[in-house]
Amino acid sequence: MRVASLSSLALPVACAPSVAPVAPPGEGGAVAAGAPAAAGAPAVAAAGTPRMSPDGRVFTCVADSASPTRGVWSVFGNADIPDSPPDCQPGTAESRFYDPGAAPAAASGAPSAPCAVGWLGLVPGDHPTPFAGMVAEANRTVLAGASAIVVHSRGDGGTYRLEITDEGYARNAAGRGCRDRVHDLHGAFFTCGAGLDAQGAASGAWVRAVVPLTALRQEGWGVPAPLVVAEAVKVQVTTRTADQPFRCEVALEAQPGAATPAVAAAAPAPAAAPGASPAGSSTPPAAPPRPAPAAVPARLR
Image (tube, rainbow, N blue to C red; front, top):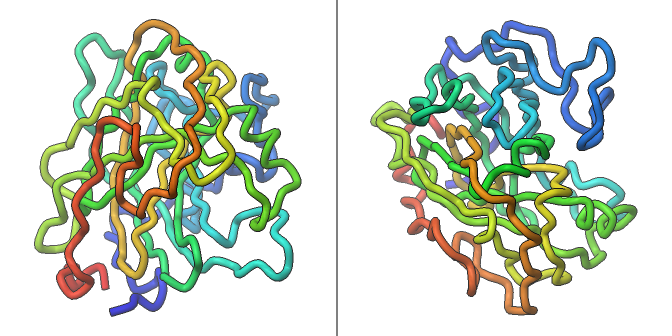
């Protein structure tokens, strides 16, 4: 069963946005990695309740000294790839944020609990490379003193991927379209939660996965290139499961440790199957396939 549109996905009334929109990275007032925020346009929100734009495409977390991002998340999909030639097939992936209303417990010694972001949507299978993602500006200061990113999640039990882009990737991708070969991103697969409840909501205990920065790997389908963590630009989470609704609540925090050197480029290799961990990648492993669409709770259809 194919889901027709994002509007068919149920969103709890309590998650309805109630604040003014915040410009996502790259759209009006975005701050370059490492650059100070302009007056009146902070890169992260002040202490308080997380904020969300009316259309659900931007979610701003409160400032967190342990966060590997600067807090402003935005959604993207195939249709958002810039500079694509007119003959490239546009994507139709749709997704939006919601406030999960809960967060994982703070780690021992951490100043606060990590900010949790709720993300749901669908990725129709009408594109050669279907995907959807959520992205935020990297917090270089935090990542410079981190050895790993801790991923806390609750959700559908599907396979997602944590990825980091750096300045080298940005230079390589500049001005290129969908038919140009760029280097694939360094990342690691993780399983989002342990499944949804009978009402189709992400609930239960948060699942914790530690992703060492040195374990991030390219998948092998693009140009081999190293990852320089000190030059991190974006942190993102993606999903490629097509023709099924997805729902994932995620919170990221940096695990302090020795500075991570440049992560080696991948050796050319066949592309990994969606949801499968490529050769040479490490924990967390890919999750088993999700149930067939018919098994998805009615609330998400």
